[in-house]
Amino acid sequence: MQLRLAASVAAIGLAAFAAPSHAALSFSPFVTTGDLDTVLQNNSTIGFAYAGDKFVGSVYYGANNDQLYSTNLTGGGVAKFGAPLGNNFGGEIYVTASLGIGGYGPRDVFAGSQNGGTIMRIAHDGSSQGVFATGLVGGVRSLAFDPFGLYGNQLIAATNQGNIYTISNTGVPTLLASVGEDTEGLSFTQQAFGPYAAGTLFVASEGSGTLRAIAAGPGHAAIRWKGSMPPITPRTSSRPTPRNSCRTSAMRSSPASSVWAARCGTSTTTRRRRPSSRTRSACFRTSPRTASSSPRKSSATRSPSPRPTP
Image 1: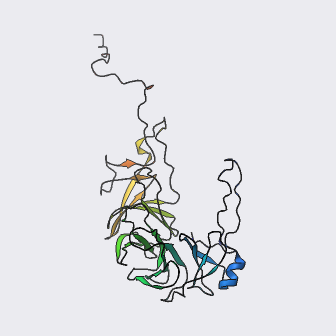
Image 2 (image 1 turned 90 degrees about the horizontal axis):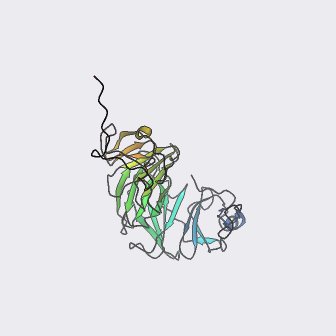
């Protein structure tokens, strides 16, 4: 899951916006190895974030490990961004930029290191920087801003201890959930699907291959899949699937959150160990009766059963 594009930051040079759907995708380097080597003597990229009029990235271990760099919007003009971060920053350094909402500044840059629970804030132009938040349990493994508002448009951070925090614009962390394992990678749903609202936070743990949905609000449940996410049957399906195709099991995680292990995309609204009649399935749905479907006869019009002959 690490954004480690060893030779270069391989940007998706999708020249296929107007191309036919069957056309092959073409890829080209966005930030070149030569430019990174010239500026940083290091081309092992890790973090990379859009910051309005530029991109800001980081490199992995080696020379200038705690030094961010910037590029223009076409991947050129590589230059050091801000001063070395210090504060025991090293290893994998994760970066994101504020969205201009929520009081976090106009595209200021935020960085966290796997070496510890500290987050730095760097001014948009790189002219100043300082410690923004401390006290996170575990090294920082993911950073992103909530763009939809379900989590208050706050900064979200995840750590190698499995703790997921919201961080206010004054740098105060609040534990949102704890999943009990390294959590590297987070994003938000662009639209509603299954039981999940648009803007729901999902986090990933590469060690176990688990994807979790994190509900807004501290101590809420997390929905988890082991391995690959199951497909969601479209609502237009004409063949209903038996209800027993999905199973759920409940597990206790930590005091901070209750984690529900889901099979086949099933979620539950109860805390019982066995699924109840309130279980909802995210992957199997029976389509509503259409106009062409044969209506069921009411009890008033149903033909009576013949009586047996004496």
